[in-house]
Image (cartoon, rainbow, N blue to C red; front, top):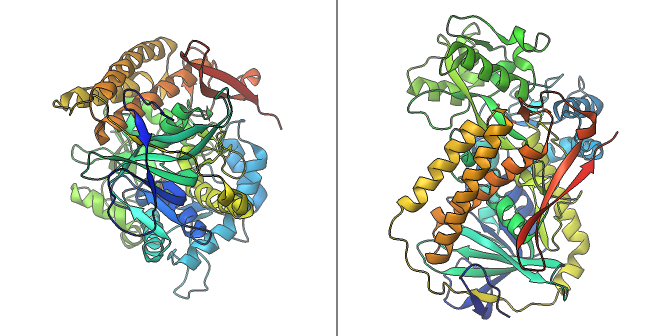
Length: 578
Ligand code: SIN
């Protein structure tokens, strides 16, 4: 069988079990039970559990801890206090999600929260407690949209602490092989029916480090945990790896993708010439920080008089955007200087130190802040176990669209979703494992670069990165307009055609793979934004400023190939009722 991807043909091979940290030989297919793409909280949590069932390979683009998880500051929202209830957490999540969360999913995730927090503690995550004693209650932060203090944290370095503990366990585990500095090109898909319509995923093609070779990794289950796609935008709180690889690969393979118009802009990223994607956690507003303009005037009373700075993120980000447009200034300011200096240094050591690097003393000065792309609420559609619409392919964490977030994710529900679904996906695999294991091996083809040559001008790639990110920021940002969306669509479509040509002509490089992925994700965001003819949650469009009952649904996209072999996007909707 020849499986053709662009001009890059693939052909037949030898299969080798991939269980040890060894080098790869030309002409082989690597084999494992679970192929996990991405090493953040979702990928590693699943890896640690799945290692009890079989061999696990984790592919990660940079170092193991170069993940969005590692940068997470706030924490994990979970009901662990007697002052809180599941119903309140559910209600806050539904309110933030603006009418299109899947309520059953919300209830399930919230109910599983406390157990998953306990599991992280058992793994070795050192969350902050009220007292010195290990049994004293967990210290709980507060963030926008939460009616109670419920964010379990490790000061403002929660993600780093979780990533440290998970990576340590994963590296010690002989059943887990972590392959760093490697990037997946595409999924390995085989047809299960004569018409080719029923597909199954059997692994992925991986570009290994310092190597021109793309190696097929065959797996019984492939799990996409690649995080979000903040790099689609010019300004983002995300790390460089956030190029939507999982969403792009799944969509290309024919999986359903939903709710892509709901891109969350975090209201407060540090605004400084030399600071790249540094977040000022919402937890700082939870401790009383106020937002002011350059004259020191508080402005949230105009936009959310009840909740003020602790309104949900969509509201606060839009308020800041409007203030910046009104005043013509490049940023607004966050002021926490009224709080005790010793408290601030202890509660926010990361933010205190980073701001100090740039000459800002948060115990005395206002912090200049701007909104930036932070989280993709939509993604690859999954069922309650993390299965996508392609057999053998699962998606977890930010890559997935489970129904938890609806039109606007509640703060600190992302790490929660990742651990809950990693557990559910494991339970599914455990139950099905004898069937999964018994799956017949299929013929896997080696990747061949055909007539592709080495790319000699990197500018061909970098230029398009820049155009995509600027176009998305200027035309598909916090406040949208149909006219601008259509212009963006035209531009991105042209760029996609150019990228496909480069992809045919040149040997693929990591930079080219990521560019191809951000272009596809950008096109999905635009397509979804044009479909939704109303304003809801994070999607605010001037042409349709109202929320409409008739639009209480998800827009779900899927790539199909028609009888003439032309690719098309099929759209279906899913009504949400409660
Ligand atoms: C933050 O600390 O403000 C980010 C937390 C989140 O994205 O949920």
